[in-house]
Image (tube, rainbow, N blue to C red; front, top):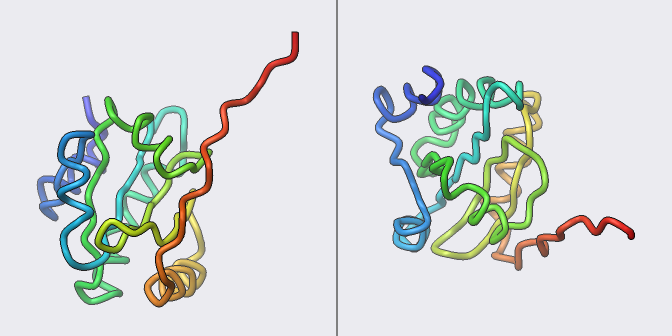
Length: 136
């Protein structure tokens, strides 16, 4: 079952649920896609905070962001594509070009500054996803 604050993103704000099959088409559309990798709210306390802040960020950037929630069952596969290590994370993509990611909850001013910088940045290559190596 989805947490009520995450479900609210679908029900009240109409954010689509993105999985591995729908991801490419969603991020290829014009504009800046914001992919919300929520994770398990019981494990990652910031998840519910980010779920509350995301619609406010969409408002602050006056329609310049197209948020979506990444499906739990495909989150790890897509996480590897974007190379982030912690949950929850917002990944910013412009027409299939990676712009960057913001992990965890931030102060409002930090969100505004970081997102403004991402929106003016050119696409880059996502960080490489590294699997921890355990010595024998």
